[in-house]
Image 1 (cartoon, one colour):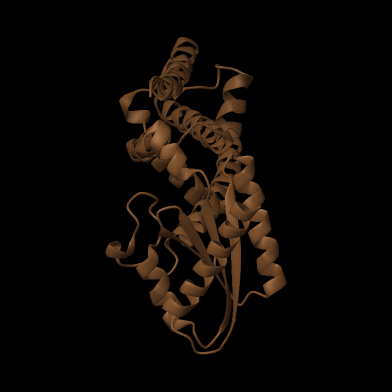
Image 2 (cartoon, rainbow, N blue to C red):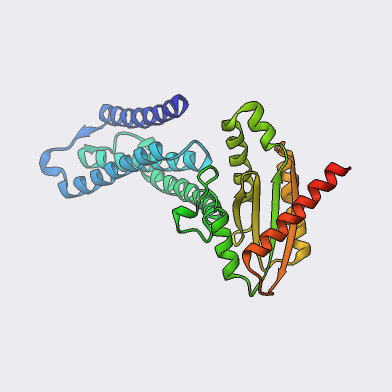
Length: 288
């Protein structure tokens, strides 16, 4: 928080410093126009643009995190504001004696600022597309807050069963991940650490799967991914990839897969079958 406040203070200080310097340099070298020589309509319109650009600069400074897009947006708005300010001063002063720098800044600041703004907006658009993808993945098929798991903000088992009931006539794959050490983590480091582990797993799964897939927390230490219209081999590859990604985070899991080919079964039977496969894997590990 202190770092963000420092960054925002620095950005606003830079803006104010640039504006004050331009005003001082212009006032020191130019001559005031008489009141009759001022086009007050043009002065009002130019001043409105300056105030609007200052407001945009303030909004971006307060709303955006540090990054390349933010830097480009602020640079563009600062340059645009400088161009607007010189247009305002041009209405109040006779600027011909000021020099070449004034003409260059007045004519060049605005187009350069707009170019920087355009570049920053393009990067911002890419950022937003990624955010939208994550939200779409996380909230896919989800409109009822009662079907959300409060710890992970994912769909819960009831939401999964509802989706399975609607998709029984189509092809899909189910991937189930069982966290091996969650109970041990809860017993030794507390439930808050266990919840942190669950949230970490939920974020990774939601970010890694396709936008059409559904991720849910099925039980205390189990997550299920519903993958519509996915061939079994591809689903297996996805499951192994997700298991490897979790392992890189230090999360050990068991993984089982069930492929549905459009036959009519109840969601409970499919999930029970998947659970049985997982239990058989556990028994095999214990026997070994």
